[in-house]
Length: 143
Ligand code: NI
Image (cartoon, protein in one colour):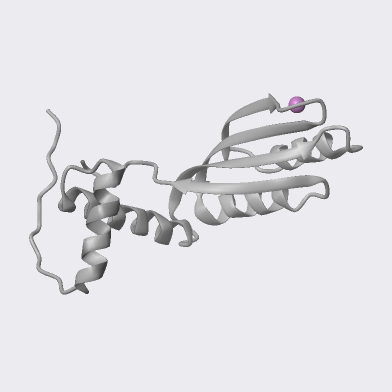
């Protein structure tokens, strides 16, 4: 049986125009009600905070776009991945066009280690863009 979260009711004071605009955005995004939209907003804030807590276990993706014709670049990126064992759980490589490759790494581990890996890859000369996207491992959120 799926466990249901205990709910808390609370009252907050927020400027009316902020609430009005929040309701508009929530509705446009497809939320059924304000509670659901607000709960998701709070979860995003918690995940964001956890991504900066060094020891917290996070999941996420590192996306890299680079020119695979650049000498040694691909080998360098692979070396860095081998230097961070256990963090990378899957890799997707897409040949975007004749020159450009996109690599998406699914990662899981301590926030500090994941950030260090993303920084190491993203700062390699020749990488055109890199982005670490952090999400939760899902263990702490009941929904
Ligand atoms: Ni490629």
